[in-house]
Structures are given as C-alpha cells and as structure tokens.
Length: 49
Image (tube, rainbow, N blue to C red; front, side, top):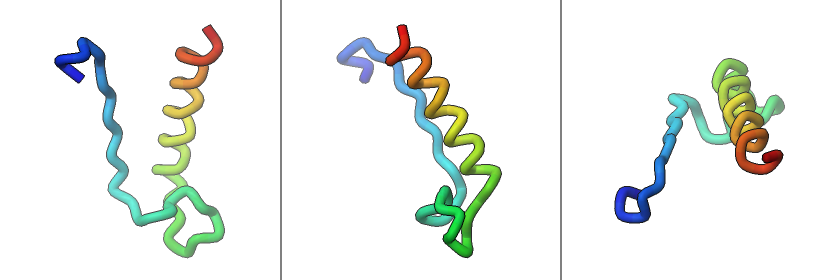
C-alpha cells in the first residue's frame, strides 16, 4: 500500500469463523455490530460520494 501511496485500515476481530451469522452457536453480537458499522461507513464514503 505504501508503494501505491494508498492508506489501509485493517480491522481484526477476535472472533470465531462466521461470527456474524446469527444461527452460528458462536455468533458474536459485538463483533458483528462493529463490522457492520465499519462496512456501512466505508460504503457511505466510497460508494455514495
């Protein structure tokens, strides 16, 4: 990213695979909410200019 002169925001969730799937017994509601909010914010900034 540095050579492309781009910024990168990396989010890592300490959660199990498929943590956002509410039918998953290991569903992580807090991580799901955070990931969802980040995705919506990204779309608002980059797709709805």
